[in-house]
Length: 284
Ligand code: FE2
Image (tube, rainbow, N blue to C red; front, side, top):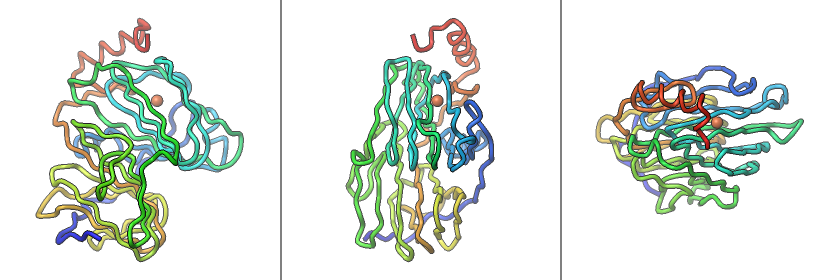
């Protein structure tokens, strides 16, 4: 396997904030708005997970988006998606939905189950200014359609976006160059990933525990990784059986103006988005 002379360090551990969204879905906002600049091009990461249907059953009824991409990764459960661009899909365990809102969509995300566990993640990835008003785009990937490989140490690597050890992910993007890996690490295993130093990167542990450069990262914690020194990647060591999201991306370095589900570059563009939503021209 690859090893790196210097792994990135953990800059800080972040617990996230319990909140609710949509029609009362309980979730943990792992990547909050105050981290958008530090983790450019990523805008948000929500983790939802419950075996109580009251926590998720109402789902996310019709709501708009403009100016960025949403990436939904279902670990368990089923969610139906419909949007104003005519896309419809059923997300089941292990599936990914990648939606580029571009100039705007109105969509709904509704659980298709009345009991059992619902677990997953939604990531918001910013678009460069030049693509914010592009046509909406959408694609579902079933679990078996996602590129994956197993390392010599038995680490399963699911490549949702970007590239890992020569395996290209389901989606690639030129401007933000996102890397999105789901790693299933047996206790005692290690996984090394090359990362350009200027790319912002973080790890979210959703099962077990890992160590990065000697720092323990327990379950339900995000580890924000440093961009300093001579590190050419990150080395993740599993101190127990662990499941981990590893994300990295190239900063866009552009102004971020957010109002709820609209993420643009200026307040003027936000006012325009609100006006377009009121006028009914978003999602037309
Ligand atoms: Fe949404």
